[in-house]
Image 1: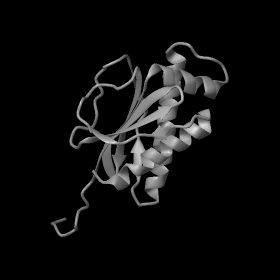
Image 2 (image 1 turned 60 degrees about the vertical axis):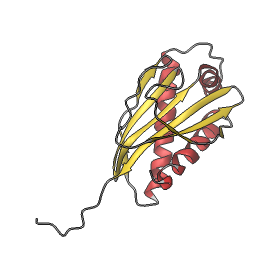
Image 3 (image 1 turned 90 degrees about the horizontal axis):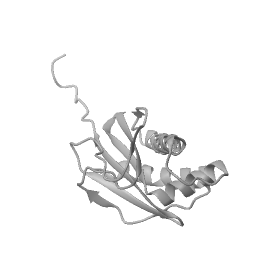
Image 4 (image 1 turned 90 degrees about the vertical axis):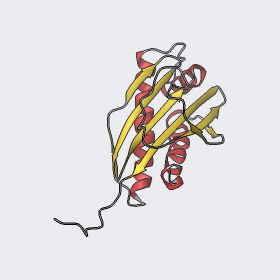
Length: 163
């Protein structure tokens, strides 16, 4: 997978968490992920299409998402519920939007489907399975979360075939 497709998601994650929740998300060392289960207790999965095809997931452990959403809403959240799930969907959509904006600057135009929410530990996550998934782990003062990107650029037709 082309690292140029990954960096916009890393940068977007840091920016969105800082802007929306005033949370400093510190990137850890990226790694190749083969397991098809969620890393955290609440995960958002988006399908991406356009100049590339793939998936984006954002999976939060409970302490990190409760702290993040508490900061966003200005009130303490103590359990993962529908409000937390909606916030995770919104955060992942914002990360996707920011990353796709950066990718457009590289002439890679993508669209994203509505996020799908998956709750519970070790739940299956149906990523785009044609390429490896790059896991981008982050830590915050109150927990951790992982962004996973699995993407493949579409091949461009050379125009030399029959019409």
